[in-house]
Image 1 (spheres, helix red, strand yellow):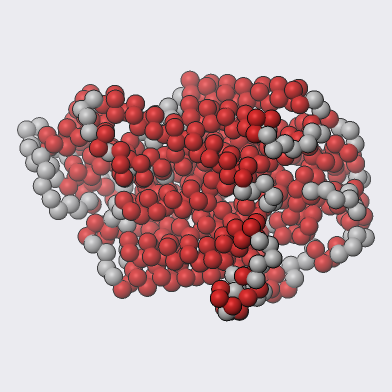
Image 2: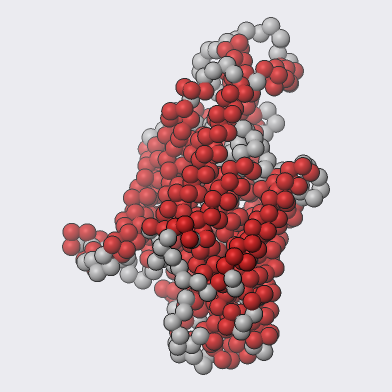
Length: 605
């Protein structure tokens, strides 16, 4: 297909998404935008180009090994009724807008922990965003039969990155309060989820029943291929252990990926929407994976003996039969999978970057003017620039670091890094004894092991694939081999890295938390998080504060960010709720907590 014509199709498709987002923003809380189906479908931002292309590559090369990464979320969803509802209630009463806010608030409102979680999220997600841009670029060249270029200005992904950066900057920062619902983005992502599933099912039907004569015919031909049986078995106990670790990895990811936390927690309008999500999203994953195996092995049959990238079978198969229409549909589906992830991830990372790094560690002083409009405009500008630069930075990362790596390898490493937040995250909602020192120590130790067992080998393999480090270990100590740490030799690199990093992360978190008691703020937030149902209606009453402050001083701070009218209205409601005299001069713990919650969406916890 002609490159110019495909670019026009892409621009029209992006225009449609702009229109849907704009329409949803205008509709507000109508039944078309605020319903359980839109919410459930927006969670399918989990399905990126890794799902759309990478799963087929894994199925073609390793048979059933693509399944565990989807079993984790399916296993997690029945628990959502309890776990997700609890997290939503905690986040709603505390005006939490990101996973960094959530974790840092639980451990005594720690500024350092919020910054640490933000940095880890950036390390994990930026390459993953770059991965989506890589997929867009590669698939564009496949569809147009054009060679990949080293010239940035001739690379389609350059302009896609710019357009997406502008789109995300505009729709992701329409509100200065980061905890506000972004109905335009959510509705656009839900529509993209429908389209990418629809296009993928059409491809599956085309390959299974048009090119071949059904599932049985594909299986019969594939079973005659060399090493078919070897690729399509779990490989006994050792393979089962690898599967178990991958299931744990995907279980953690559905909770801990910043984009998933944002869509499932921050964008949740009503708790009862969860009841639809716990069956609709697993059904979505089932439908998405129904044709992965037929497409993968159909590609193996059609391209047997040819040197082709199995990740791209979904495009190469219709192209082989000169079906341009089907090829373009598949490309648009993969494009949808990429841009929804890029947009939502950049919005969440930008919020975390501004609220947990830039504002608390440098820009707070410049926000101490009394002009609320100026402060709000500055915060929005910070986030807009942040979104734009994050997408451009991801593009640079793709161009210079991950050009030669597969979709699955980069995605898996991102999942392992994000999983290091797991012990502190789940400890936050279930264990009152968990402390700040334990959380910080556990995350740092887990990241160090993660770096040694997977990130360092990943970097060294791109520099010197023949390095003795892989075979001999650190300083020649074989028990320190990065892929066989302490002699554990039956796990594949990703499950191996996850096992050791999570094991030491969890042990350090538990040991340090038990050994060193947290201060009164940590214990206070622990009580409010773990027993949220007890305090949800009057959570200000549960807040402990040891200090003195004047109501007028708190009012002055609130006006700086909320404006005079909103501040006066909020304080009037607060005084009415707790029957406080209008002329009361001294602030109590309830007012301090109330003021903190009002400010959290603007400048973080």
